[in-house]
Amino acid sequence: MEPGYRTIPEEVAVAFTFGGSSYAVMMATPRDLEDFAVGFSLTEGIIQSPDEIEELEIIEQAIGVELRMQLREPHARGFQERRRYLAGPTGCGLCGIESLDEAMRALPAVIDEIVFTPADIMNALEATTRIQSLHKQTFAMHGAAFYDPTEGLIALREDVGRHNALDKLSGALARAGRSGGGGIGILTSRLSVEMIQKAAAIRLPCVVAVSAPTALAVRTADEAGITLIAVARSDGFEVFTHSSRIGKEVTAHLAGHVRRHGEPDRKVLHEPAQGGRGSS
Image 1: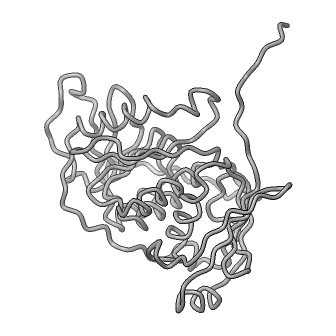
Image 2: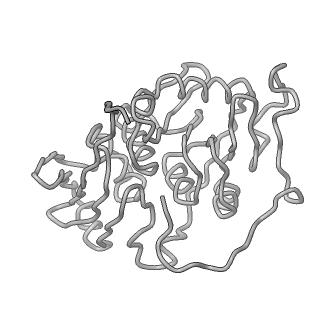
């Protein structure tokens, strides 16, 4: 056995507080924390715009980091009315939700008539893979990226938690004055329902994941008007919902490798519910 060195990612407790009240504690990579604060607040529905945050302080402590926010009125009063406390492990997206209604809240409809070509999807995927530097160093990071067909890759954020990476991306876009409209969201992780909920919150019309989606993620994307693409690899991808946003033109290296799923083709595996918390 030879001694050696490996770059490994850092992971710390990140606490979100609003007006002095604790709301969430997530385990996350301690970088892009302003993006994280804004993005998490947006995808959780606490704010609708970064302008609603009056003050943001990043307080580093021995045991973690506090993202201390003050909301402008009347948003501060609205937050106190819906206050809850959430504590989750790395990337846990729904831990601590207090009701079924809250877990399966109605999503805003994503109305966007843009059409992407298969080449747009592959270019977005390739660009994300090419610049995901932290994952290349550690082999332990999730990435979330936003690609505009006319501008290329706009932003990419990485984190040990897949939900955190998407929240950081959401915050980066919002702080730059952009929503997800007109672009493609690339996720280097499995695709479960809470990722679709976060994508809908920032109006992403198209979500592309390298892994397969859950059945609930597919149903939720369908209802929200999101084009869901998954199992995206260098040789093709599968379209699960709203395929009308994907043009029929297929480049030579993708011929035969763009599969459009219809309801009759969709197979759902049902297994007995298991106790305990699933992995993220």
